[in-house]
Image 1 (cartoon, one colour):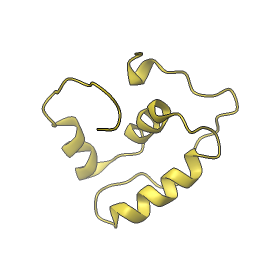
Image 2 (cartoon, rainbow, N blue to C red):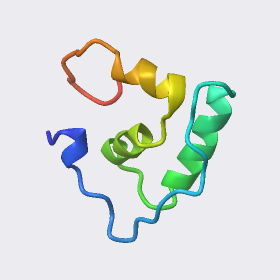
Image 3 (cartoon, rainbow, N blue to C red):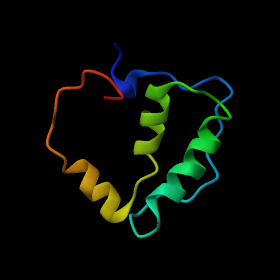
Length: 77
């Protein structure tokens, strides 16, 4: 399995037109918008994860970057 950050984006990939998530708004609504936009280009779980990391800012990014490392055995438990 490739590391998530090694997965190539599709050739037709365009930057998403949504604001970065900072943790102060409804996460479920943000995920709905995010999923809708990414699914225009791909249904690949690794790309969903890779791109999501680039759309975090503020306290959401701080939280994510301070998670303890854990072994990855799959993208979805």
